[in-house]
Image (cartoon, rainbow, N blue to C red; front, top):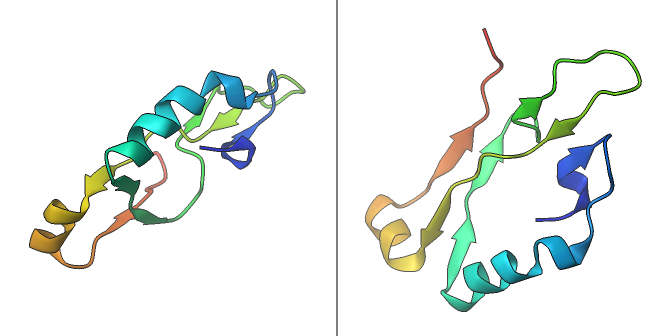
Length: 79
């Protein structure tokens, strides 16, 4: 989680996500790689009030990844 996962809207401060990031790291979980746009949500506005965010993510532990091997997630465009 970082400020590169959002464009527009109010700023994101580390204090808002530090607890979540700490819990992910302390449990030895990690995010899998993805292809496509870094953003999975858009507020639908095209004026100065637009917001793009990465809301969706997949978190795995090492044991589960060992069962699957190589994992990659593809962010598909909305149809």
